[in-house]
Image (cartoon, rainbow, N blue to C red; front, side):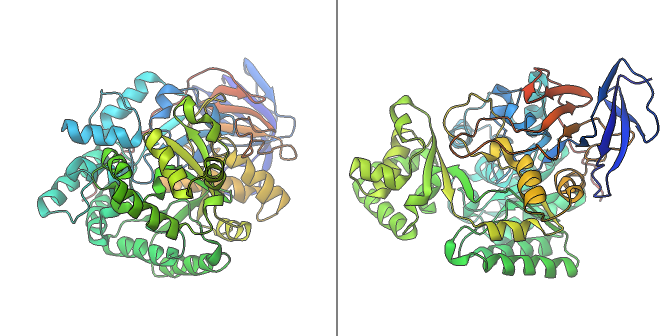
Length: 527
């Protein structure tokens, strides 16, 4: 009757209900039975030895768009228990792609190398489906990508004709299976859009039952104003809102600003706005090093930025503005990745250390690297505090997202440990050690809650009829082994990971199977 039975387990079903002892039967990739009595038989019977069995973790905020095709095993995802992820976040998706060769190159320069085999979301998802992956994968459509396909990196207000084109691209992307629209308002070209543009585009989401995800315009001193803008877009458009990786990144605002932002969200929810958020459980963020350049310097795209950095007068202006905005911060910014062998020595060092070694100004140390590596430089930035992380994480509408990539355990550089350890860290550190919430709540934040936000009706819960995405773990031993200095490690305490009923990892080792499915939201226009 079943292909696999997992017996003698403590079932956490993903709804936040208390765990219960039981067993499950898997047939044809789905959960065919959830039982509490003596289990039946199957060709494959697994004794869970009284460990916890949870739904596979759903990463609602990832950036595996380009890496998943070259790393289909997605070890960084699978070995921490992630079975489903959503890409296309922070306003930058790899589709839609303009047919204009110049705009196509602008996108490739910015998001990374892409195959020349798709234009829209449907073509991109078809491409990944043919490649096959270990994880289930869906995508948001990036507002920045839509804007780039329409008007390049122009720092100006969109015309009505351009707005019409952006609306068309957004609607087509939703109809082809995108789950939401994301924005990245600290990154060009998204940062050049005003509130009116974003609100008008978000109105297009409502008839499709979709939602708006935003990397807000500021996460430091002006984070409260950024939340107000996001809520205003939600209010004016009627679209649900997801605040991406919510945090406070300036020491001057620690233990203060997040109280204001959460109060604003609470008030908005009381007023009837559908607002949720996600968060990663670390005190450092990560992004590209070129994000330290003033936004105006990026007008025109990557090549335009590099040209300005080569111009002595422009460089002087860029350095002055950046040093002013980065006072006392250069020592918190570390290089995590470079594209060439020439600068591998810089990986793991702060910009301040690099500046002292080279006897140059910190801004020059930063921008010289960007020039030499043609913007292919990653950074890790220590800017948050644990008190704020815990306060945000405890909120009932906060779910977990890694903000990481699909990567092999042998990838280059020192990527942020969130790529490899986000979800076990929440369980081990914040649930077991810090006791912020019960285990059932922790699992809900990683499974049932993101599944609900994404509209996944067949994943995120241990329930008959659901796809058998499952994680078996030892609560006493689960641990986020990845660290900032040694991130490329499997997490301890995860015994088995199943994707669509297929054993994909066992005792920290990937089995080599590619059982993931490409997910397309069933976007049927409601009016």
